Each structure stands twice: as C-alpha cells, then as structure tokens.
Amino acid sequence: MAWPLTLLLAWFLGERLHQALQVPRVSSYVGVGLIASLLNLPGLTAEVPGLPFLANIALSLLLFELGYRINLRWFRHNPWVLALGLGESVLTFVLVYVAAGWFGLGTDMRLIIAALSISASPAGVVRVANELRSAGQVTERVMHLCAINCLVSVLALKLLVGYWTLNTSGDLLAAALGSVYALLISVAMGALAGVVVPWLLSRPGARERGVTVVFALAVLLLTTMSYGLSLSPLLAALVFGIVARERRVHLTSAQRGFGTAGDLLTLFLFVYIASLLDWTSVAGGLLMGLVLIAVRTASKVCCNVAAARLSGSTERKGLLTGLALTPMSAFAILLIEQSRIHGFAPAAEALALMAGMMLVQELFGPVVSQRSLMAAHETHVTQADDGQATRSAL
Image (cartoon, rainbow, N blue to C red; front, side, top):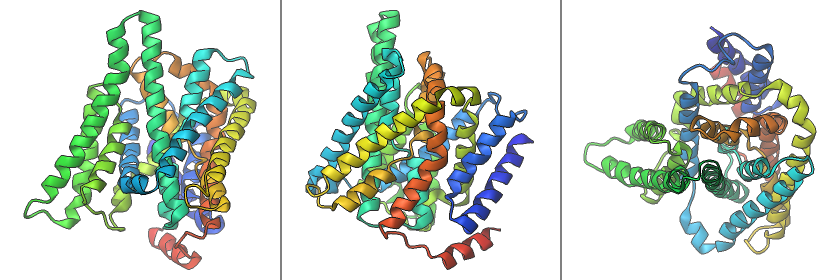
C-alpha cells in the first residue's frame, strides 16, 4: 500500500501547493518522495522488481516529447545554437571535473560526476514548460540546449563505461559493446521508429486521435527492446522524437504530455527518483553538492550570456536560458542507475557521492526553471486559468 498512498499524497500536495504558492508540481512530488525515503516506508524504498523499468518508460515519454520539439532546421539556420550547446557541455564537463578534485575524489568518480553534470533534466524542463504553456525564444533555446546536453551526457557516460570495462577486464570487445555498440544501436533504433511509425500513421484509416496512443506504444516498445539488449532507452526515445518531428507528424497541444497516463507516470517518476536517495549520503555530500551546483550553473549561465548576441538573442535572455537549464536530477539519476543495472560497478558509489547535489537539484531546480520562464514573459497560463484547471482536477 506504500506506493498508492504516497502517490496520492504527492498528487494532492502538488495541486494544493501549485495553486496556493505557484510551486511546480514536480517539486512537490520530489518532496513527498524524499520524506517517504527518510521514513523508510516498507515496500517503497526496497528494490521492487519492475520499478526501474516503469521509471524509464516515464522518462522516455518525456524525452520523446522533448525530441519532438527539436527543430533540426534551426541548427542549420543558426549554427551558433548548436555550437553553444556543444561548447557549454564541454566546458561544464571540464569545470565540474576540476571542482570535484577539490574534494579528493578519484579520477573515475570525477569523470562520472562531470559526465552526469552535463545533462539537464528533460523531465523537469518539459513538465514545467507544459505547466506554464511556455512558448518563445527562451523556451525553445532551453529545449534545444537540454536535448544537446542529454545527448552529450549519454555519449560521455557510455564512453566512460567502455573505458572502465577495458581497464578492469582488458576485454576490448566487451568495452566496445558496452559503449560504441550501445550508442549506435540505440540511435539506430530510435531513428528507425521515427521513420516507421509516421509511415504507419500516414496510411489510410489512421485517425488523428490515435497518434498519441501509437507514439506511446512505440516508446514502450523501444524501452522494452533497449532493456533486453542492454541499450539506452533514454537515447532511443530522444532520437525517436527528433526523427518523428522531421517526418511531419504533428501532435496537437491536447496530445502533448500523453494525457492522464503521462501525468500519472510523471508523478511516479519524481517520487521514485527521490526515493532512491540515501539520506546518510546526502548529509556527507551536501557541501560538495552545493559547490558543484554553483560551478555547473555558472558554466551554463556564462556560456549562454557570452554567446547571446552571436546566436541572435540578448544577454538577459541568455541569463534566463542558462538558469532554466538548472534541473538535472531525474535524467542523471536514471542514467547512472541504468548503468548500475547493466554492471557498471562505480555507478552506486557515484550516486552516493552526488546525493547531496541531487537533493538540492530535485527540489529547487524546477523552481528556478519556472521563475526563469516567467521572467522571460513566455508563459501563457493566468492565475485564473490555473486555478480553474486545479479545481477541475480536484
């Protein structure tokens, strides 16, 4: 009974706090998950079979939606945005790697933490943007840069997995299968789905209302296959969304978020990732976490401000874009947890070291994104509209 009761409480508090204080719903979900983890509720914090798979489905749906919002033509017309995303990812990696060395961490741990710190959480960014009905230059830049960050983070971590496998076993084939193979096959699977599914939907008799169901089932299939083949369901889902967008299959505003099922899975996702954190590790790594958050945020903000004029924006919008990329925990936690399940031994230690960092990012990252998008004046939800939606939900 722990999970249903915890999810119900998280939903109730999420709606109430959002209506009263404009707290992002996902931050409330995380707060309830953290409390449940602290109380060590029976059946919640234990390793229940199937929960990691369900969490990956939830995040894969959000990654598909993020990928669907990526316009590759924008990179061709404005290559500075692509250069900004790649440059900021590299700089964040380097700075976090150096900063982690101040705390006496080994090279392997520093590399893992730096690779994860590149990412921005698509779960936090997409849900906050959808909640606010945000649209505009800052919102689109945040989406595109978030996608670039996620791709580079997955690439960096997979290469580290291959490097660790080669060092520990000396098996070059196993290292290649764990890194290059996983990356290439994951991208290929996502691209294939992005071509095949739109083709099926273009056949006579396909109804527009069925688009959401078909895409959700395709994401479920990709996640299942990725688990079976030890691939990256997160990367496959992101590529699927990008290619589907290029194939001109349109999702209406009502279809985004995958409806009630998507809301329920998102609720579960944020409670689940919060329940994975070990409070004893949080206390020990809080100082390091705050320092690394400051370094990571400074990297993203400074890069966006410095490249603002070159990429056709303003310094103020660059500042808000960098701040909106603050969330990282949901993607990073599932990425490292997935690596642990696939046999990457240092993953458990890395998650413990980053517990303090993740705690702060989970709770306050979505708030920073929300305030940044509101400051950019790109939100389209009034207090009256939001209050009406909340009353309808209740």
